[in-house]
Amino acid sequence: MDEIIKQTGVVENDHVKKWKDDGGRVIGYVCVATPTEVIDAAGLMPYRIRALGNSNTEIADAHMSRFNCNFCRSCLQLGLDGIYDFLDGMIETNGCDHLRGMVENWNYVKKFDFLHYIKVPHIVDEDSLKYYEEELRLYKKAIEKHFNLAITDEEIWSQIRRHERIRDKLRTIYEMREKDEPAFTGAEVLSIFLLATAVPAGVLEGLLDRVIEERKDNKIEGYKARLLLGGSATDEVDFVEEIEGIGGLVVTDALCYGSRAFWPHIGDKKESDPFKAMAKTYLEKLLCPRMFNDFPSRRDFLFSAIERAKVEGVVLIHNKFCDVHGVDNVLLRIALENKGIPVLQLEKEYGAAADIGRMKTRVQAFLERISDSR
Image (cartoon, rainbow, N blue to C red; front, side, top):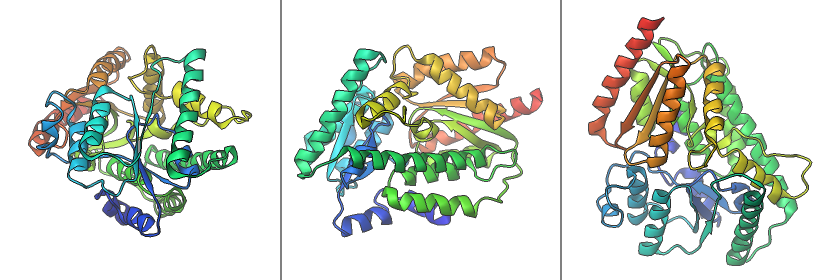
């Protein structure tokens, strides 16, 4: 576990360096609506962009106004600083306008060797599924053309099966954190997930097996309340550690840097076309507020996690200027309050150490409210 935490703390970890030293190529992506199975099937390594709490956005602010999400500006800053120069390309999606602005300004300044844009529909129906399926085929063809290689359906199915094994292992870790006597802290699980999206899939399987074996008899004790953390892009391990440092153990989450990214299984196993299977899963089960008319799915996913992990309180966070999660968190808060579930809604500055005191004060009061209601 100590090695995972160490490797999570840097963008270009030792696994990435070894992959590059061995002649491997790395493709960045920003959104969970990107089927990374296709990148793996091409023999490339997918890497999910993160900012790791970076608070410096001086250069990025010259390209994106300060009224844009500061997580996106922090990622852009790292890109412009050269921290991501190990990337051999980038996959862009319309996850949100702020993410698009981040990728496009990054490309404007530094010009990716390879950039492909996957247009992801905002609704789910027969027409949008066909459209997204075709987008995934174009995505595959773009990779084949640029990198001068061929990707077969058999290779994609092989990677789908591998990713399913990885998802099962991640679910096992969540089962272990959600037990009456949790085996992991929330900060540890976030570290595991962050590394899981920044190492080759072949390395990841063994890494997850080792951490599951290492923690199978571990028991976390001495906390004041069992919390669920939900909301917008949160890759700040330090922020979760601060919450847990005052007694709120994060026993599960509803984050896109967490369970929302891997919980759904690839759809119909009887489907012979991998693009149809991926389109159905990635679009129908995206669990993101960018999707129209899909709030009941996100609400039910949250309620299911609360029941499964015996959650005593929910903390819903969104980074300042994150429009989609800012609105969605209001709806989720109302739904939770109607069920009598204690909930705290927070807007925070991404990566701002000056903001952590205010956050801790709010969470501490929330923990006292939970204690008083028992």
